[in-house]
Amino acid sequence: MLASASPQPHRRHAFTLIELLVVISIIALLIAVLLPALQAARETARATKCGATLRQIGIAVAAYEVDYGVMPIGIHSFSPVYFDWTFSLADDYMGGGGDGPAIGQQRERVLQCPSAEQAVETPGSDANHYSSHPRLMPNVLDQDFHAGGGALLQAYRSDQVLDASDKFLVIDGALNPSQNDSAEPIARNIDGFRIFYQGLVEAPGTDLDVTIDTGDNTDSVGNTQQPRFRHGGNSTANAVHVDGHVQTHRFGEMTARATRLIEP
Image (cartoon, rainbow, N blue to C red; front, side):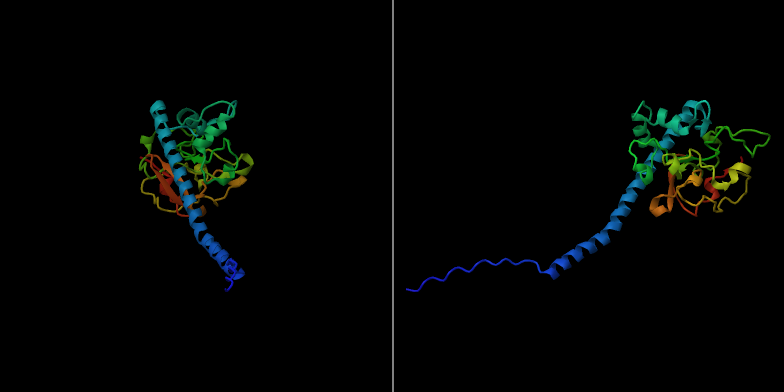
C-alpha cells in the first residue's frame, strides 16, 4: 500500500520590490494630479464664503442707512475713543458685539476672509479684512479736496450715487502683519492718490474705463490702504457694491468705473 503524498505547504505570494515601487509611483502620480484640483476647490469655497460675508456687510449697510439716513462713516474718531465702520456695523448690525473673549470670535465670524491665511492662523482674532470706499464710507476727519475751502468729507446716501451698481463699497483689504494681520478700514489708496487731490469725483463725460492703480497686491506694513486680490491665486478680489451685489475684480483690470463718483 502506497503512502499518501504529504501536503504541499501553502506559498504566499508577496509583492516584489518592482511591483511595490510601481504602486507607490501610481499613488504619487494620482496625488500630484488631484492635489491642485482639491486646492482649487478649497479656494473656490473660501472665495464663496468671503463673498457671502461681503453680501452680509452690504445688507448691514442698507439697514444702517434705514436707521440713520446715510451710509456708515468709515472712521468717526481717533480720540478719546477710536471708532470706525467695523465697529458700528459688526457690533450693531452683524451680531458681532459682546464682552471679553467672545468679541474676537464674533468679529472673526463677520469681518474676516477665509483666504487671508495669516489671520486664520490666529483663532479668535478680532482683525478686520475689508476696506471701504474712501469717499462713500470716509474718514470724516479728512479734508474734502474736491470741495475745497477746508471742507471735510461727509457721509453719503446711496441715492446720491450715480451708477450705483458700478461703484464698490467694501472690498478685500491688504493686511498689516504688524497690526494683528488686520486691514485698514478705508482703502484710501485704491485709485492711486486721487482721494488726496481730487476726491475720487469725476466730471460728466470722463472716461471711466481706464484702468487704475490698485497697488502692488501684497500684505505688508506699507500697503495696508490698498485692496488685496487674494482669491484665485492672488488674482481676484471680492467687493460689495452700493446696490448690494457682490462682484469679483481682477488685479490689473479694475477700472475707474468702480471707484470714481460722477457729479450729477
